[in-house]
Amino acid sequence: MDFNMKKLASDAGIFFTRAVQFTEEKFGQAEKTELDANFENLLARADSTKNWTEKILRQTEVLLQPNPSARVEEFLYEKLDRKVPSRVTNGELLAQYMAEAASELGPTTPYGKTLVKVAEAEKRLGAAERDFIHTASINFLTPLRNFLEGDWKTISKERRLLQNRRLDLDACKARLKKAKAAEAKATLWNDEVDKAEQELRVAQTEFDRQAEVTRLLLEGISSTHVNHLRCLHEFVESQTTYYAQCYRHMLDLQKQLGSSQGAIFPGTFVGTTEPASPPLSSTSPTTTAATMPVGPSVAGLGPPGEAALCLEEVAPPASGTRKARVLYDYEAADSSELALLADEVLLVVACGTPPQRGLMSSAMSAPRIRTNKALGRLQRSAQT
Image (cartoon, rainbow, N blue to C red; front, side, top):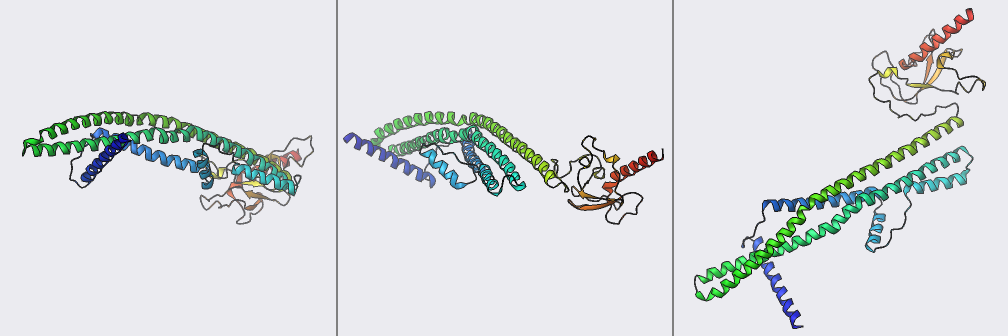
């Protein structure tokens, strides 16, 4: 008990001495041992690494799990060393609702069939999202978290210990300075000077040893950067794989919906899998077809044994006009062209018939010429 009390009193005295030294340094009443510039740069680099690692870690967690309540729940499970329960993704939940709606509204109806197809695609998207979250958590979040909870805690502990050693060293320097000042006035302070010098040597040795340990830990930040760089590459790779899977799933769904829409509404325009905006190219935009004929497929009108007719072999209707739907917006290049809007229906007049002003598009000139050529071939074959 006596030993514990002596140790407690000694620790209290050391803490008080450090507090006095720290306070005097803040008020400029005591000298402070400065670290070398290289050491200060290592400290600043370590602090910057820690701050940005925390920010990247938190924002990545938000990206993988936008729900703050779910993040808090996962954090509590981790702190309690319990397994985080499996959570349904938003895509899988949407797929479940769509499947239930299709079952209740009728899975054989056009709407029900479409709901089933979209539900299957959303389920695949949810599974891909789950795999991406799992991969990103292991390959990216875990190394960052291990650095903050492991290496950085060790660095912080050694830095605090170095700070205490420096305060002890500066306190010993201050006591030695006072002892030497008093020695000049009285010879009774020789023992105090010797004692202060001995304490200073011990404090200097401990400070140098702790500074070397801290320096080695701070220099290890470079290897931490290399490790985080590798983890970042793995995160980008997993994110690329995830978005590629999503693109493939949605492309397949778009094809399925396009084919089913053509079967349900044969007289309407069916979208393709191409992007909504035309790709950039060196050719003039007027050479790209901006419209598509509206109406049933030509190949579906003939007998099953006959091959589908090409566009050049199709004769124009008797009225000399045909309808077409605009696929995408088009800005007129000059006064000889028309500005078109997507989904606009145009009345295209064949050659030989006076065009109706405002209804002729320059982008339809190529189909109109081909139609005229087809008419010419039919007339020559009839004469022979």
